[in-house]
Image (cartoon, rainbow, N blue to C red; front, side):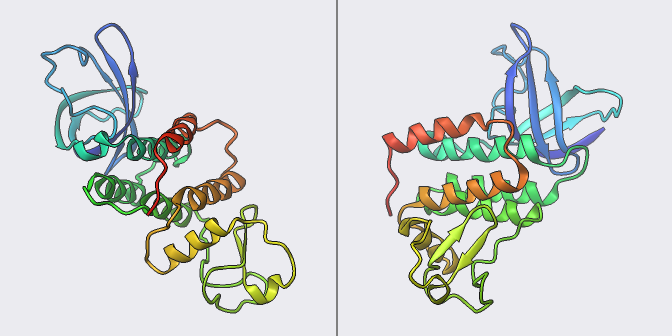
Length: 245
């Protein structure tokens, strides 16, 4: 039997009364559970296996089974404030879907667990900052071997003063003002200012621009051959609730 903390990444119906739950566990990485009777009002797992919940689960490990049975589950943090904010919820869903689709399978994922746990807790804070999702993306890039150097010009190797003059999502290259010269930058000013804010431990004024740039960078490196479905929901939510510092 294994007792571990788990973050629920996704849940879908298995039958009229049961769920299949995919969770990121602290000890075993991503695990798939079958939760029989999970839809019933009297289910002992009520709330503990809701998407985005941080819970403690007990299950029996079986390397020969694709679906494992949950013996016990209790909520540690349900993130109620996050759920009250549609934009925060949309960002959290993108984070969990990226982990579910692209994190290494069959191995412990302590770094991914800690990064996601901290990001969800930050989003759940009443006065959370605007750069949480962007910082999570930077952290995922580090964990998966695609580290971005926000401080150094890719062309001259010198430290960048102020905001970078350009950013290339295909390579992750930042360019300083001297090296850009009279060239027209490809990146928007809001994106470049957002990277400078992150580098300075401040909050981006218009976070969606730097978030999109980081997502484009990840696409170029891990190959988003499979669509991240929650991105459409995030983009629609941004139109309804523009986020401005």
